[in-house]
Length: 77
Image (cartoon, rainbow, N blue to C red):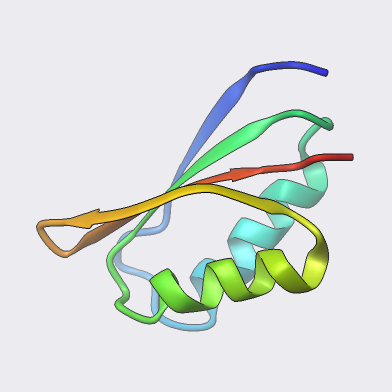
């Protein structure tokens, strides 16, 4: 396990791209890696956690401010 954090800035992308790109980043990540996703598409705050539930990834935290969602995602295994 590792506690690396990777940030991916998906601001400016529209649905479904933020969820697809977050999924690709999680697939490439080593187990235990946390990915911080920045997205300004309002649907990303719904789509990304939904994708995580379907794919078995953890949503560590989700917050929004100034029109930007910040989601911390973790690849468990």
